[in-house]
Image (cartoon, rainbow, N blue to C red; front, top):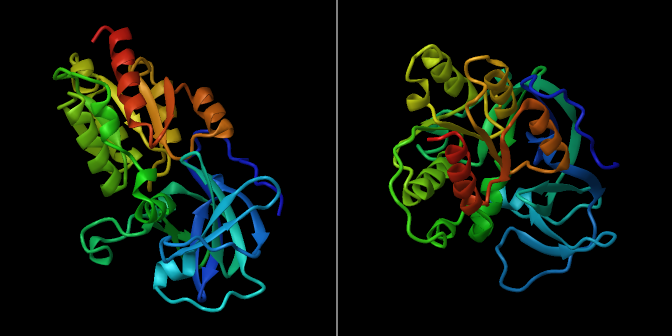
Length: 304
């Protein structure tokens, strides 16, 4: 399959999901993360690596780490089959291949058709399912690929010590609105911001909840005190970050609210989308130190 192209219009609250199977069960990945699909190839093992890491291979000129997704998800290995596929992904500025059994197809749905898994399924903490999607007659488990990679290689995720490298900080009282559905990343982001002096952060689990809050204070005379800056992920159930950004920037009273898109999906295509929607800045999720610096600048420019 050739490299995928992002065809969705900006801010429509839609997502294209590539469905694939592992041991007959349906899973999904956001097409925006997929570079291409390849037939599984010979992999060079790497000593002392994680049990789910098969090793590396080099198609063309790019060296890729291969993660055995069936083994990661179920703990069960099987002899690799000739018809297995590699889904080549790009997110958090990394290129990674995931072994799957089959690819079923692509569905375009609304984020409203994706629900967060019940906490009883994830033991009260984040599991590897970021959402359950209704694709036609099928329920598809959308996997949290960032969390999978972070479990295998924690150094690829947010590093709080980046904030400490910024030097001495002072406490800031501005109200920061955060829209992030991952419990794990929410905690890491909020801990990092707290260490950077941002002690007044309010979090919402998706774009809809954040929008409801902003719409509810839209006409308040102290709007700036209740929302000085918005940080939003892109991938979220019910309403994604692009739709949230569009709603804010299209609103006459809210459009001056600085919006930072903080997502693992920031690449050339997504950056163009964010610019079209009016986002003030777009940063890749591991860059927590840069996020703090950009927040400082945007609030200073706003006179807060």
